[in-house]
Image (tube, rainbow, N blue to C red; front, side, top):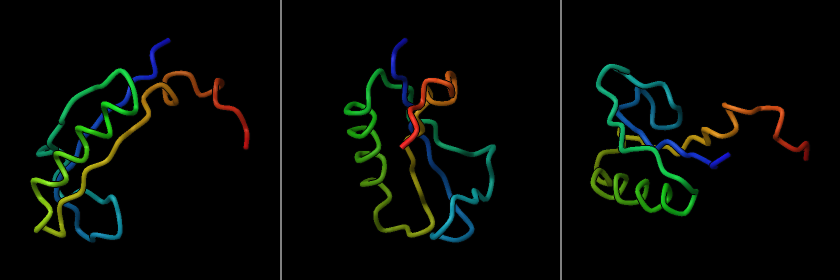
Length: 74
């Protein structure tokens, strides 16, 4: 299985959290086949909004959500 990653972001109510103000207005940057390309897209999206502390972008490891039994314990 591919190690898919989702990059998205939006306005948060508190910059220390991931409590998105309006989930309907999230900016979905895309789904990427590996972490390196997802990180590159995340950096580009975050850089566009660097002056707005209430904007947050994240990388979600979709492969971990799709097959949680594949996660090795630490």
